[in-house]
Length: 188
Image (cartoon, rainbow, N blue to C red; front, top):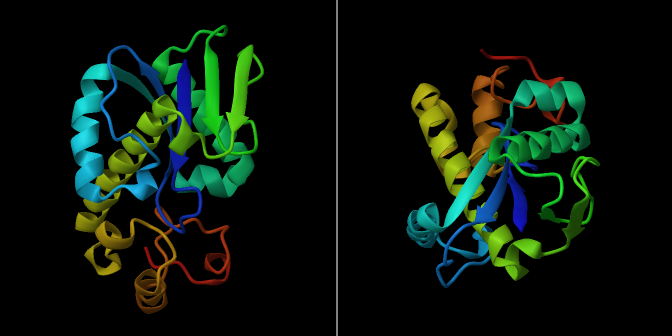
């Protein structure tokens, strides 16, 4: 079975990351939705998951999200993650959520609400996605320190809105099609 989850859907900045996970060993205890775990717990679980799972990553950059729209970007991310994992068309695939973005060529794909908290293989994908994207955003913060990406990881926090208001959005990082960014001048 393959579990699929994403992180970064509602962000104003940074990529969307879809992760597909396949179990190939004994899973550690304590797996659940990454949002219900502390950063330390996620990091510890990811270290354990690296020996019991294979992961496929489907990155979709801000510019692609702006061009395609969020629904098509999610489809693209799922497709990339499954391709990266080398998923077979007959494998069972469970996607977290209520909308099925799994390509039709996969014969046993379905979605399940709260799968990231109910199915350990989807929890594994959730944890891998969250830790990996957060690390990416922390590296981005080194390049653009005024935006504090390491703290809000691209979400629309008060701190992030203030940075956008002060410095303007970054065209290569921010999702310019997302309101209120589509009305602002580009900084970089």
